Length: 232
Image (cartoon, rainbow, N blue to C red; front, side, top):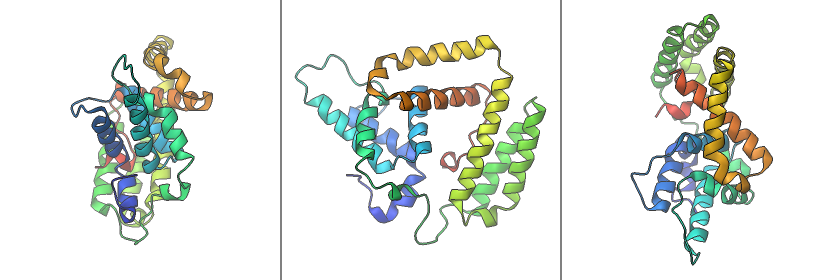
């Protein structure tokens, strides 16, 4: 079970990445262990697919319980991908409605000023890029920032808008990559993912690969993430 009370669920949802990282580190028993780009992409794929945080945390615990029960442990668990199968099994037992990112009390999870600053800074980063198409996205983000008082009342819809903008940004960045650059990214992904392919379905692998490549493009281009998950 999750350590967090149910009434705090919406707030926990916006702490998705931090909660998952801390649970993995705790289960592994090494607090200083850093997650890899593959791990972050996997968390992002779960979050995007609407896998409840509770299911991810429960899956991590169950995967490590199974690992510890083995008589022979050849090596430490070095990737969150080891827990992928257990997470999906836990997700199948967790009511999907609990993944809703809406505060049942109606209280905003962020101040309008926080959202405005987050979006304005992201817009400026895009304007610093050489691609002309990114300036259009920057203008749209500035408009959202100016209307933060309105958007703070419906964070789920705002998150959907930001996801759409981020997908557009990734498409623009990908179009400006050479074939060799994209090939190198795929080679890196293939090497990291190889030990864990047997633990994931074809759909899971396809989603993870897409999220990994998208994240890698954003990181390589030094473009900030738009999601409210990165506001904390």
